Amino acid sequence: MQIAVSMWSLHREFYSRRLDVVGFVKWAADAKADGVELLDVFWKDFDTEGPKVLDVLEKTNLKVGAYAVGNNFVIPDPEARAQQVKIITRGVDMAKYLNTKVVRVFAGDLAEGIAFDAARGWIVAGLREAAAYAKEHGIILALENHGLLAGKGDQVQGLIADVGSTALKATIDTGNFLLVDEEPTDAVKILAPLAGHVHFKDFRPANAEEAPSYPALSGKRFVGTIIDEGVVDTREILRLLQDSGYRGWLSVEFEGLEEEKIGASRSIANLAATLADL
Image (cartoon, rainbow, N blue to C red; front, side, top):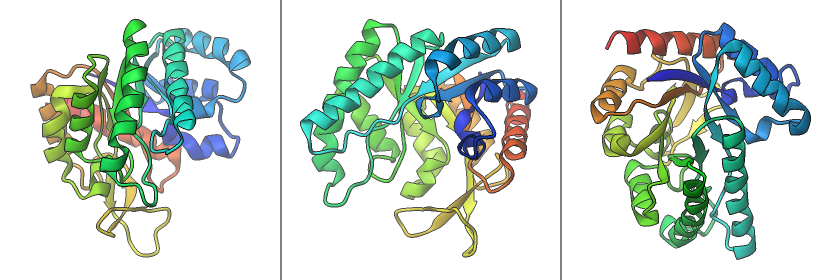
């Protein structure tokens, strides 16, 4: 297994205009990552940036572990859902351009008046269509346990089973399970055999004055932290992944309150040390 770092780890740097995709790849190399996870939301001008990113990847000898899109199938309008499929298929095209085999995808967001069972058919239909395109192009879609609607291990497992495509696997996000009141190691036991990509993220319970923090279904709140400084059992999850035969990318996704470059760098170092000690 190799360690990548997701550009979301430095999203505040990007939104404050202190960083672009090229600069992020250079920083990731300095932080001693093996690769990067790039997100569609961070391109400013792809026609200009795309060739520069390929050039800096070659110069730094970094690989793209995964390309990530931000789709949402929990939308009643069929035409709007069709546009969400196009977001994924464009992501597949981008993955081929960036020489990666994995596109991270979502099921959809929690929406007022729409329960998971009501949205399940929309999610399955959209993912099935997108997975057919991905399979045609030799790409794996990896469904993340993202958000409060479909974030439990058995929900992700069930959606993958319903879609029934070898081109759809799971993105295991180690921290997000806490937001749906699930113990991360229990969820990883369910999803490890289906893993196509992994986000290593750590959370701890939030103090009342800490912001931003993330609400769980139970009403508890969590705040991101450096890997191995929160409540996620990094070592046990690595062991479960290893025992399941997973040999893909481990992508650090730092969401803590610390300065992002420091927090993400320490997360990479901590994850690397624990992995080496297995």
